[in-house]
Picture 1 (tube, protein in one colour):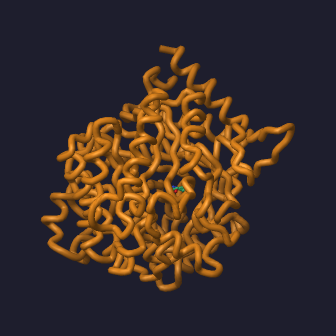
Picture 2 (picture 1 turned 90 degrees about the vertical axis):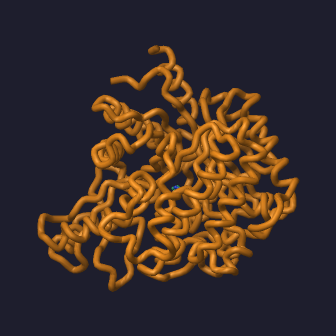
Length: 458
Ligand code: IFM
């Protein structure tokens, strides 16, 4: 079945990954500025200090999304530009920058989809405990109100927190992302505060007249390496942590499997805030996850089956599940399995699990890194074209069986700062060279034509 002719197409970026200009406009320091200063934290020793310089090249980037024919652009606001220390009145230069940014998109006929937190926490808040403490969630609600007061009249969709699961696991459980904490299961307090921050921000956005509020959660279909009880239980636990622990407080107002008992604060009251009804549910999808019990025969066999492929999360010893490589016909440059059927599975699973409680869905991130080579002044990124084609078909399959999917946002518009991987992974439809020159890749032209074909089908 083809995609509906009014299907929303967009691209996604995030402030620290593309903006640069970290000392411009009165911006305060973020936890990523600090994390990048740590020796060995970033694969190529780089940082987002300059990134794609979108802070100074916003209009150029808007022209790219306009010429691509996309309906929407998802970008994030850097909290330290609005509140350099994470508290107090708004920095006028920060608000002015995003005011102009939103105006530029609207003038280009592109709907702004705004993420309020894509991981660049003001460093001053980290010094007070960061997401491990409740105060940060409360501050986040204040910050959301300041931004919304200025921008709510033009923003089409608000997505308060990007991927709370990744912020929790990578940032607080295993420490491969900022703020670099390795707390294991204790990190779940950060999960609760990120969720509470989402809820408080949602209330502040509504109070300021927001047109629509959603969320952007990372989801992965989780499969057990074998039918053995230990492997099945390990997979169920990982599914609970990765998918259900973040979706269910928001959609159902409850934590799965008694997880709420270990959370800090007045959990029942907090859940009422966290589960404010939403207008949309954003799914960020990259690949499925294969899980077994540590050391089980199934886990060892699965590891041996694809010995060289990278697993996104290296699980520390003592944790009762293990993640192993996923067999696939193709892998991205990052070593992630290409599995479009996993996107259909995630979308159908969300519908089956949450029924009427699931608002209309947008795929708020989907994309791959590729081994790009510049030839004749361009990049023939056939692997990305294949990837996008297959994943758009996977969305159409989900729609075909009744899942209400309204949009698809490619991660990413630009090659950018890929967190702990620095600039070694290129996810862009547009290549960004060392001189900041933007070169649309073959996938950019392909997507433009695909969008035109969908529109023409109406
Ligand atoms: O680059 C990230 C993005 O910031 C969050 N979602 C996954 C992307 C690719 O790793």
